[in-house]
Length: 130
Image (cartoon, rainbow, N blue to C red; front, side, top):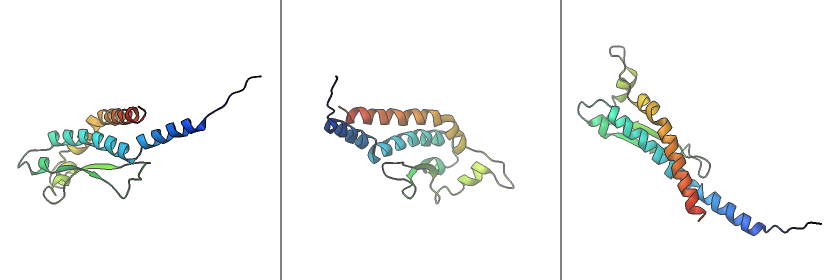
């Protein structure tokens, strides 16, 4: 006969550490790191007439969509007031062809952004499990 005893206290403690590691703070850090890569690419691709557009591309955390430990949502977008015309450049108008820079920035760096987010989450997990 083989017998064993399982100490669930240690297991519960490990799961608690794991849960804390991938909690809201870790998700926020990972999301912000990925969004920063896309923001930086958008800044380099944005037309530079006055510099107002490049200086106003920001990362915004969408609190109304973010769900604590479950998910965090970020948006990379130019501020509306100083750079209201970004939409006309990105999508074009009836009198002007599109000169997109936001979508190409996303397409160019989305893989890098995902890798960066994985890196940050991995680091947070390693820190928590030490």
